[in-house]
Amino acid sequence: MFGLSVAPASAQEKSEPRRTRVVLGPQLVPSFPGSSDHRLRPLVDVARTRGDAPFEFTAADESFGFPALRRNGFSVGPSFSFEGSRPAGNVGGELPRIGNTVEVGGFAQYQLRPDFRVRVEGRRGLGGHRGWVGAVSADYIARRADDYLVSLGPRVTFADGRHHRAFFGVAPQDAAPSGLPAFRPEGGVQAVGAATTVLRQLTRRWGIYGYARYDRLVRDAGRSPVVRAFGSRDQVSGGVALSYTFGGRDR
Image (cartoon, rainbow, N blue to C red; front, side, top):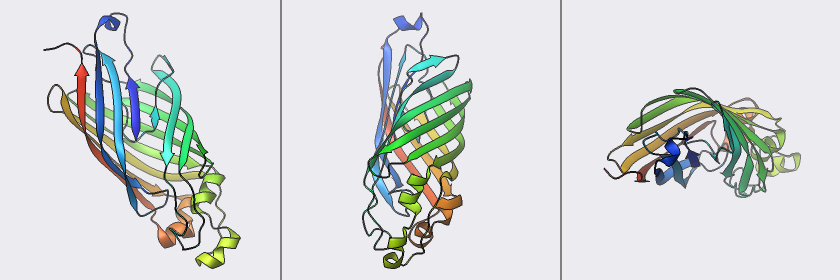
């Protein structure tokens, strides 16, 4: 995942020097929805704030985005994500290829309390699956300024029929060659799960950052003969990275 957050600043804080935290490391994610294999991708996060104000919380598993509008704990903005390809013959020997997909959309989130946040995302695939995907998440956040942070919360993933048919369906013409029964899934809930993000500052500049996430495919996605025969209903991802903070006042 790639994140960007900018903590809101008061008029007084706007005169304070900026601090920027950069996170970089590896992560393992399912090769594509329903896959039992994993791919290695970069785990990147960039956060900015002013003075001694803590960096704003972002969950490590959320898509890249930034707030375009903020008011009273509510914020909205664009979001972007990337979904890996499914090579031809990767499952069933004869199922069609699905290309890499760039997903573009938006998010809305609300910070109910300093320790609790809810977020909704919706994105459309450009190329690849060409469907709509969405997510609803909630996070309980325990932190001591920027010294440490631990978050934990549920995740629900949605997708439309076009997305589900791309990754979980079996068209009639592909049934006999693949040895699978024809299957035409509808849109709806795709997976339910949970995620945690952990950050620990080791020195003023250096820290360690990581996350883990588990999803269980449900409904049509979970019933898919593609997943049952060649994939897994259990979708696990996670990563670990180093963080470096620069800027601010010298101490």
